[in-house]
Length: 479
Ligand SMILES: Cc1cc2nc3c(=O)[nH]c(=O)nc-3n(C[C@H](O)[C@H](O)[C@H](O)COP(=O)(O)OP(=O)(O)OC[C@H]3O[C@@H](n4cnc5c(N)ncnc54)[C@H](O)[C@@H]3O)c2cc1C
Image 1 (cartoon, rainbow, N blue to C red):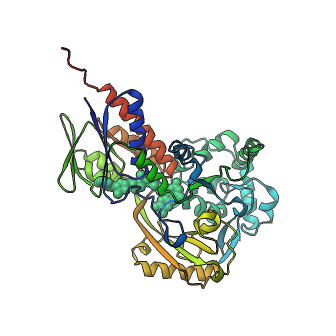
Image 2: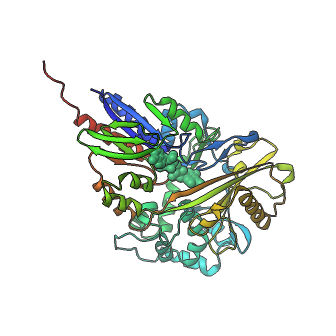
Image 3: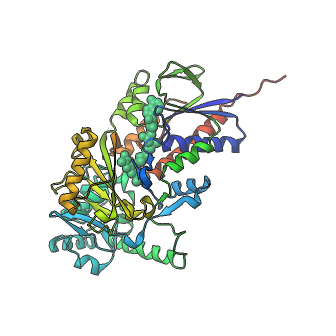
């Protein structure tokens, strides 16, 4: 008898769950009917690509990190190897806005930790007292307490306040669109904890990592096929979504959400927005945590309460395309980040057509600005015209750009960024123990926000669900 699996949410986590569930069922010789339900008309969730006038514009994520291998592996499995595209590392500088001026980050910083002496000491980004304080990392004893701490507490302890303000807050908390004072170190940068434990100093640990990396890359082919720290797909990340969709044999319902979820003796019943119902032996909720909470509130109030406690903040991205001839600021880097103390309404900006050269036709340039986050969530509610005007005004002040964009695109992400507050992983452990049999939660709210982590979680969830369905396989009636 066929088993029925329903996956709610067609973002990358839901799609990866469906893909790996299909594969695990095939491997186990198990007949599983997989249905994926997505409320939006399009699949992909935060992944959304537009291609106006020769530009490739990402509304949400624009790339994935390759040190976490799950996304690049999935691309390869799906036959997208030829579509993979690295960053333009000849121009890999990142700028930091400090004192109203864009200053280059020194070469040799690894995750904000200096691993090369000269570029660091000659940089004008950090003051002399700030540099000396960062150097004290070599002598400060390691922490012995195993409890979670915030990114801010950790960086202040090891590298000092200035490194926190100028580097860690905009670069690291910025990746999570979070406040460094509340961001859980354990849940977001566990590597720092390991390095402190192993080397007693971030600087020593990062220098060792840099040496190991350059030894490993010696002799590797350079050029077109090179794997860079961040990779993307030539036509945008929507290509990954399209490839997953074509690989799935089950039923995909879009434009319909799951409005209710009930557990009965024979499994689960899901009611769709239009009143249709689906029956399931197993359900995976790959939605934001607050959407999962809404579906679970009636029958599992404690679980719903824990899910509600995962906070979200809102952001928006504004992409502007220009004729290169009208643009007079050099775009010799991947873009800039903004420390909290700078009086601008931008969180950061990517110089997209430098970072990924195929994102704009020759003779044009593409930029993308980030707005909102914990500091200025209110801005996200402004209309498109106001947001484009705001970004243009800030780019004029910061970069002197007065040119008229030929293309402008605004994407809002209300409650788009889950916040991994201190203690997050303990909360997720508790959430998982509260899940009733046959129900799983997966996705960016739980064990990693980036695309690779969402793929990894989808795969792990799929394998657990298929194993459980296999165990519960009804024994065929004997004649
Ligand atoms: C602006 C921005 C930039 C980012 N940049 C990067 C980046 O460069 N690299 C990177 O790795 N990560 C990046 N991220 C993070 C990453 O994109 C997301 O964490 C990831 O895509 C989330 O995937 P998900 O499947 O967990 O959730 P989502 O993509 O949010 O998908 C959840 C889906 O569930 C659906 N849903 C909700 N409720 C229901 C319901 N009741 N019934 C049916 N469907 C429902 C929603 O419509 C949605 O499609 C970025 C995020 C943002 C917002």
